Length: 73
Image (cartoon, rainbow, N blue to C red; front, side, top):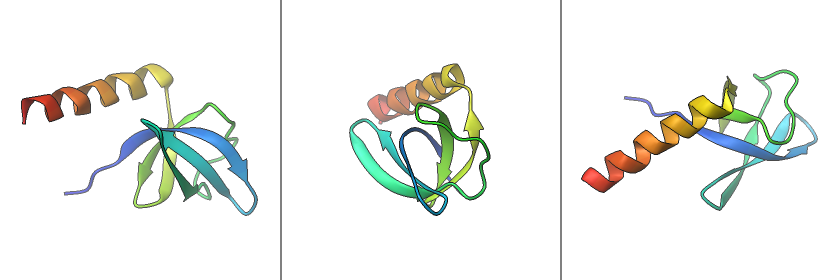
């Protein structure tokens, strides 16, 4: 099973790279697969690659589901 999570772009870097953040954790990822990316956008992240943009409301709903699943465990 694969897991992709929504993260927010905090900084655009050279060479199709960006810094993203999730709950205070920052990571540098490839954005080569996503066009017209801007700081503040949410992307779906899988093994270091941003796969696509995601609506901020959808990102929030998905992150809430992950958080509630963690509480149930």
